[in-house]
Length: 118
Image (tube, rainbow, N blue to C red):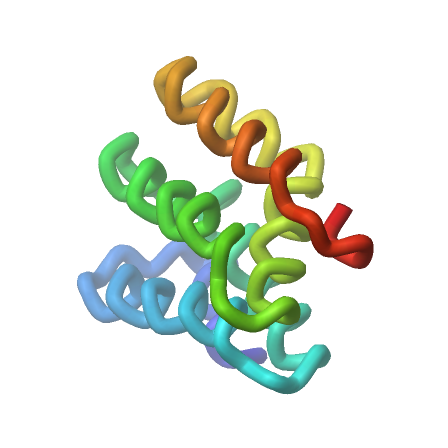
């Protein structure tokens, strides 16, 4: 992951970087290891904030996060919620997502009945 962070800092624009970020977001939700989930979230956030990402790709990443608010394992749901709680990510969502998608995201977030997730 440290090598990936170095690549992101240099803003190397190659298709492989975009492809690996899809895998990073999957690991952020699916990993059973808390440190791995946290590192993946950090790398994904760095990518979304600092990397040249088009609106369509940004919406795909944010849609993935929102979809995983209902992931089958609590740790995955928590990872998605923590990503949404990050203030920078909130700005990305409100700037790039249509109002109805943002509303659906918040509705889904508030209907979760898991104490740790709220």
